[in-house]
Image 1: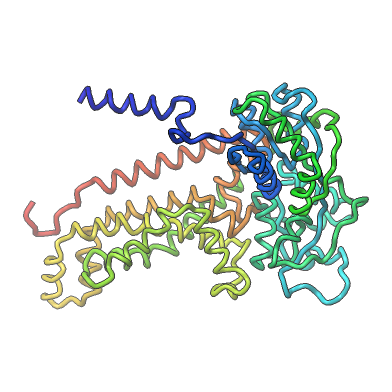
Image 2 (image 1 turned 90 degrees about the vertical axis):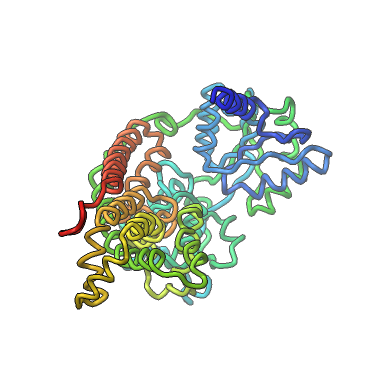
Length: 494
């Protein structure tokens, strides 16, 4: 036993050692942190770097704020390309960037888009944005640059107040575009560069530069690097004419100027925001209870089929049932987005960016956790007891309800609790399908993510504490139910 523990400790030391992530004998290129909306720029830069004989770049993409917080936490990188200049200013103010390296390198614009083929025939008018009861998908106006740019533009044309109550939160700029592509919203405000690359939307209106704040991207060289001198050379390549070609190919316009100024007060500094615990907790509970109603009977029927029947293709069916348990939730959400979107098999139900859509997403992801304990409980009941009840004149359904169901009740209850708990914690699929609308679709998990985006660590910790308490209670109760021995049937042998 001791030698086994020694082997585990040695393996852990090897895996955690500096440079352990690299395969033996394989050189690692410089590490570049890239905002999701600037991915194509980084790919062009990678081609330039390799053309000079360098190793392929190690490119990490995420939201600008997430990348900056990784550097603040101590991560190493050779270059950061950010779509939010506020975070580059914040990094510079913390003395995490090389002196004089912070530079604005590209600019873009905003536009209004509609799904392909659904654009109105008349000339576009700004009054049409969010007309009627339609939702407008936008990221947070406090944490995501697109949301901030769109808010300022809508305020300048007098449309923000009319739309504020009908804005459905999405994680980032790409998610806002995806919502329009899927037909979840009749219109959307996105980056002009993203719209030009999409084959599924039509550009209705390009926002004039004098009406909206400057949409700019900035770069910086982190002091904690991975390859000495690589960051400076990458910066030079991007600012050369060949780099300008990469920037234009991504739908942006090259721009070179030193980044000046200081971060806005509260832009990236830790702060607190109004508590949303009450509304998001209530929505989470409603979603979880609705998922129980949606999944219970189909899950019970599937558990019975897998427990009591042997047929060709049973293993295939079981694998399909458990796919949502293994697939990443975002993959499940993307598939649901395709199915529920315009042209999809379920598009006529109009469930995107709605509470029923949140319930459906939670139900699909939670379904395997309903089925597994239910199946185990049914397999633990001797089928001969049900056969005896049927020999006494009970029909199949009545025998199942009178004999099998009571004996398997604890395991079935454990399945309900686990499935409900999974629905309470669901995020990836739900945010893609239903968005994040306070009081309607924003759940606890979405609120945690948004508090993190807003750098509200105190609020995030409060929400995580509530999530942890709920999770503990649910798992503890499910374990007690699942491990308890069922009482013998009346008249049976003790």
